[in-house]
Length: 295
Image (cartoon, one colour):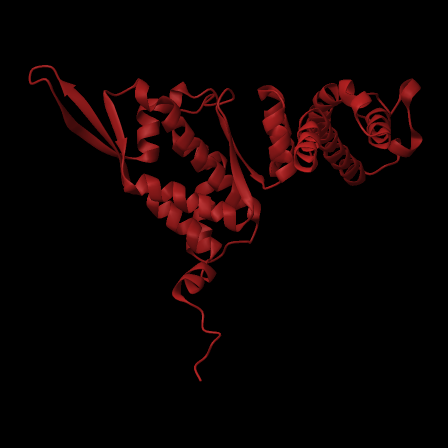
């Protein structure tokens, strides 16, 4: 009898995935000409091909200065240098990658923001711009890599930012429910670079609390009570480190433990928003479905 456990070629192709190799592959794609510009010739009345660019060069030459977050940077090379991307890529090519997932995420986040700059502003500078198959492959391979490490990208048009965050269905659902400015904060809290940044996490929690507090009458009593307790007693709404709201237990708490409680409060607030959404929308729909089904 034959070997019934033989894997087909598609299973084998899916299994063969090396993160470092894929990073190097993505970097090679960035060296390919993938943007073509066209110009209109008034004399002939025709559009003709003008030039070809790698993605970063095109953004550098025509678009980077338009980006809300370009600050004092005038080239993508400067941004790469600040983010230590070239050093990271060299380590990957030589097989010396440390295994730190944050370095991969930073790299992918950088590329996605370059792509977003291109998509946002490409129509403002040249008569006509087109991307080729290398551009499509670049985006596809980035999405495959993110899926492999259980991360996803979130684009915020008004902020002109793309963030790479760990997949979290609750976070995604809440981000789709709340207003745009709060949606960004919901996603930002889940960003890997916010780990250890208690001040920023506190700011986001206070903004979330302002959204949740008016909903408490519509929530499960214990859930609402726990929300209020954390909001008022772990140095979010009130200064629990000194003054009339001082809590000695919080004063003596290590930052790592306080951050864990901040994260707990974050998850609790997401749950509050989702429960309110359920009671205001889904609960009534399900009740009507039951009525239609059994009456």
